[in-house]
Length: 169
Image 1 (cartoon, one colour):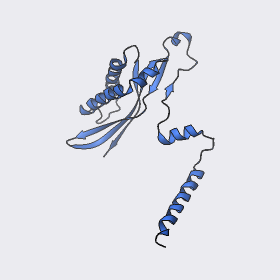
Image 2: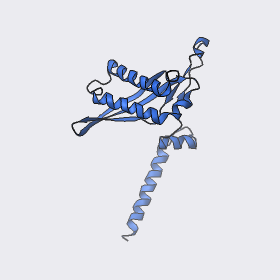
Image 3: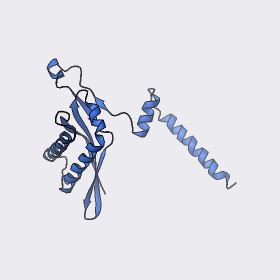
Image 4: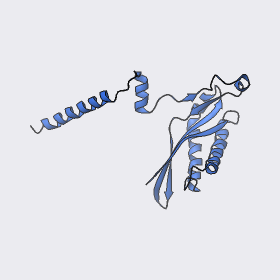
């Protein structure tokens, strides 16, 4: 009887999981790849194409926005203790059709971005009202400079901070 109890609990748990899955199922059908990407968070990199409404003059300066695959996590350290974490999602604006260069150089770019973010954290850039336009402007400029250094000034037009959050401990 004692050996049967874990098996019974396993079946009850599996049944509850299946029931919750059926109950929480979306109304619209979702492809298998979309479900896998959503579950793993490792979907195809997001590339935003410019809208078709842009006029012919801006076609020469059309841009793609390349969202870097993973978020950046920056610890805020006081003394010897981590007191908060900053989580950022970044995108790089590049000329239309130049997105592959960003993905080819992404490891180097991520390393450079992390160094800039750590430096910003160490000078207190994420303390207090860290969403102040002036502080974020400095951070954007520093990220843009390093992106242009790593990718080239003709490739990296700008760096966008897509998401930013702070978790205090």
